[in-house]
Amino acid sequence: MKTLSQATGRRKESVARVAIREGDGQRIVNGKSFRDHFQREVSTLMAEEPLSVYASADSVDVIVDVRGGGKSGQAGAVRLGIARALAELDPSLHKSLRDAGFLSRDPRMKERKKYGQPGARKRFQFSKR
Image 1 (tube, helix red, strand yellow):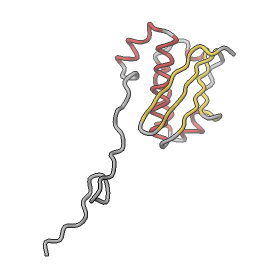
Image 2 (cartoon, one colour):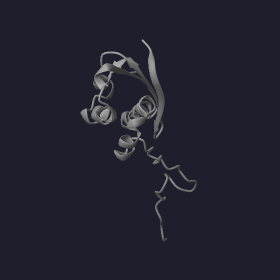
Image 3 (tube, rainbow, N blue to C red):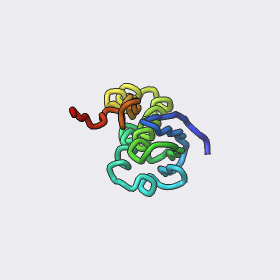
Image 4 (cartoon, helix red, strand yellow):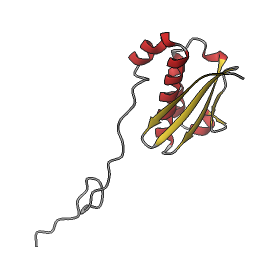
């Protein structure tokens, strides 16, 4: 099968490499179906959302390799990767993907732990006496 387009999506600590190929509409993440990998319906729907913009979604296979982070971050990374791959595949979709917010990378990351504190923001207990 011929690869039509490839893209990378990132979210939190997750990195997803997405390939869109000619096929019969399969959705595969790390060798499993989207539903088997993500388990939660919300994560599955979120990851597949950009495909709703593409009219020929049933005639292409989406193969994803995702590493790092948790399931929620992975779903966000897959979503961005699919949107970028679709924009590369069909440039006329770029505006509609951008307007729907699929091409914007979510910049929120875990805040680092600071010295002199038990966590990123929490302080050790203060004792006046």
